[in-house]
Length: 146
Image 1 (cartoon, rainbow, N blue to C red):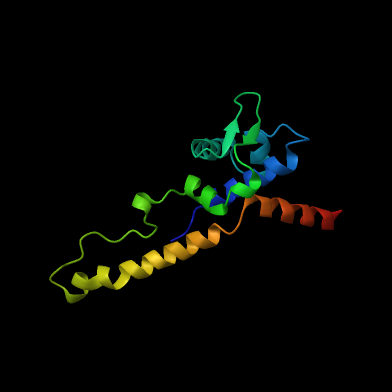
Image 2 (image 1 turned 135 degrees about the vertical axis):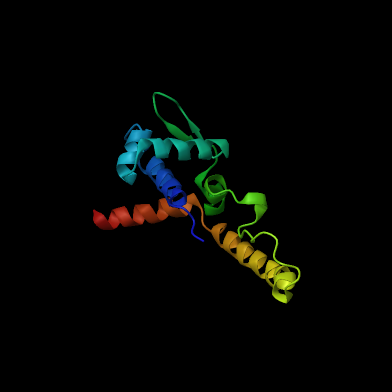
């Protein structure tokens, strides 16, 4: 299992918007140059973030604004917007284990609770970090460079 790069790209987008919003028109082309990817990918991610109610996007003129304060948007919120899990389950179980096999018959009982606990732990950890944390840490990094 691997979370796609779209999650970290989304966090990069939020960091760029916050860092450059007062000095530049933050467009998909601008973001693509910072992320070093195709603007089409950026637009798709922006659409997902907009659909999740995290941002507003002004078409044409460019411009992205947050719909909530940075302190109210967690990594989990971004993850949920970008990497929605099917039926709320992070781990997809293989279809129809053989009930005639003692392992196949019991594999769900063996793994279901453990996998749910792992998912819950990951989600709880993601809820600890906000976009405000990124702003604070970015300012610290930029101050060290100056």
